[in-house]
Length: 297
Image (tube, rainbow, N blue to C red):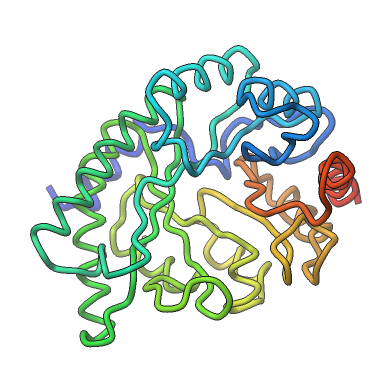
């Protein structure tokens, strides 16, 4: 059977894409915003479960935790149990990243083995917290190899990773990162590039994470790129620029962005992958107030 035809049969058995799935947002927010651990620690304390409960009390119905795979199994299970009890969704955690060398763009058996090991671990982590998405950063760009060859290798490695993720209903979301401010030398930098790769892979387990902070720096044109790549976008993250703090602290008009997502009937998670612009409890309250203001505008 042709790979794309096979994926058509597999897709029917997997969870619906976030753009068409059931919303989990509270009455307080029109979109499902996901804070991360540490964002409200001055209010909730250092205990992760207490932080989860504070998020829920403030109207949030999702969580992000990039470091989840590094936590011990008992902690992962406690987080998963509390998310279930509170009726909250698990957002992304980081399944694979390499800041030093090419990974998905490298055609080497030992690199491929490491990628597949990471994805096998991601499936096990996802089961403990009922996660549906995991972040994949395809590593660095190799200046000694033409980009077209590297792109073909990325597609090949993603296809192999999909064979692990598809049966588990886990979606890798590829995150393009900016190469000007934070991540010089990364292979994946733009939404059109990620769109091309996801279309080539052709799997429901390989989609795009559109982090609007990164894309404002790399390419701008945020709403048009959202629309053009919509069918391949499974997850969205936000943070203002400059500064990578909460909405209203920089140049991005998040009131317009959130209004656009609602108009498109987005029912996925909007990850709050940014810092707090102010310290202490006042800064944490400012984050909540910023989301309320932009969400209601």
